[in-house]
Length: 554
Image 1 (tube, rainbow, N blue to C red):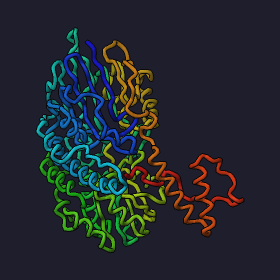
Image 2: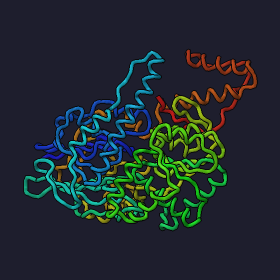
Image 3: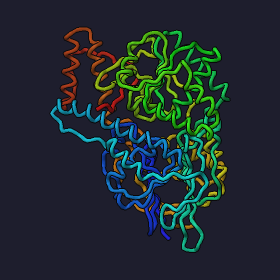
Image 4: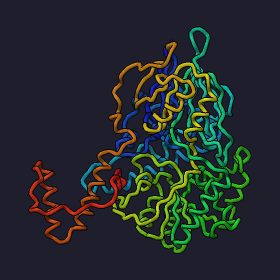
């Protein structure tokens, strides 16, 4: 029996989850997610898959987040004809999230093409359309937790609650062996923390040959607080923002993070712990997701609190683009919760463009910000950013609260793996950035797992699982992008930073003559001259940290 596992995504990065399990009789994908972050990574979404979609037997989907499910419409569009297996709640959420993703892509590509035509460049097409997403939904098949299914010949699987998102699952897979003994594999999906507001703690069995474990917060101990402690942290941030009498912008994932935040915000207002204010939910997707959460309220912890919060007079939803734009005309303290959570797309970009330059504004980041994302750049102290082609000075207060994270931290991941022991052969660490993965690998060594059997795969690497010992690299495939550019700033980020530096240096120059010196030095550098000889004048200093711009704006 030959079984191979290929890591086509979430390898030393936190997005693009996609793993291929191959046997002589079947090829099964676990997840088919979209890449986010730097432009180099996002360009993978537009390129051909590293496999033929028509040859994929079935898909097993851990949950509905776009970095796990976002390329399923593209998979179907390019020839996949099989079934997409997931939990019932995941199927419900994908029913709104994938069409929304297609709609956003159509809108953003339309805006991009307008800019490209002005530059004399060819038009581009969206990765997929809303219609493509609707076609993909016909392939979904929902299942209950802990129920065996047979997605492909010789392979069976079942879903276990992962505690991360409504419907999220770890997936147990058994591959038929020649000797009658199955090869047992567990894909963690995204693991939720112990104190997740809406979910019970993660579950899964033990005694696997291979475990593929996420590592988003590897090596980090967030010292998670109680429910009251979480709300106290939020109350302090809201109260501080209210004193500035401006907008409190909360970039938030439309599905679940928004529902958690709004539930706590309303509770704090009802209890008089923060000033009462209008909470604008500026995300049509969030409104649709809330309806699905209400349908599944009986499956959730605090489901009743959630449904009560969204009927509160403090909460208002904006559906149309016109209603969203009108929020810029409001004054005084107000709270705007808008997608996306990493500031990558959607309406939050418009709100940031309108408000970042105002000292009265507070931006509260309430989730993980991937390297290269606008949220990460703001988090790291950017003084200026580029949004939709426009340079914006960052005068707003940038704050962060980690207690709403949907991911387990380092100690919780170690505990999750411990509860899966014994693990006979290999633990693969995925869905994380390399520093955190190496820290988690060291921590897992304390469980008695040999370090040479804790593997951090790179993008498109292929492992043979059929041996009696640890997995080994089956072949050296050519990765689609340079592995060193995964979860890193790329040349597009550097170019945008350089442009901002040039503008700042020229603006700070004392007079026209000094500005001319700067521009002549730049031209000499571009022409290959040594750049020396500026008449003895010192180049005006450029203030602010590096990595200040969004960098991957089209």
